[in-house]
Image: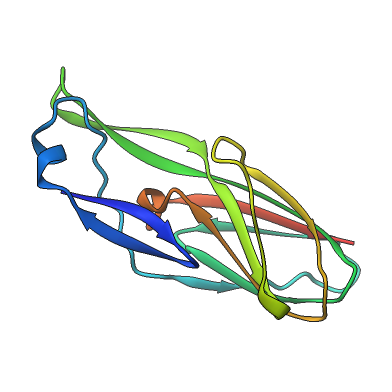
Length: 144
């Protein structure tokens, strides 16, 4: 069994064989493979929406833009009573990185991140927990 934890801007698998034997431990079939989607907010629009398996979203923003990111996705937990994985829709906590070592992240239980871009450039938006990487998800990114 592997548990995924966020390390900087990526996920890293931690092999914890002791947890594999612990009853009631959440399991995941998630991957730590990064899947990138380009953010394209159409001219005249304020928001961009995505549905799929991407783990990372890359886009260009201008200095001083107010950006709002909302994310949620499929999670899987092991039910020891049925001995099956139970899927549910849960919040994903967004993270953002950009020019000049800019970095910010939402609280673990929040699926919303608001930030003001400090500089022109490309921003990388992702999420945690990394155990949700590879699952179906929905993302909405708005900027003004």
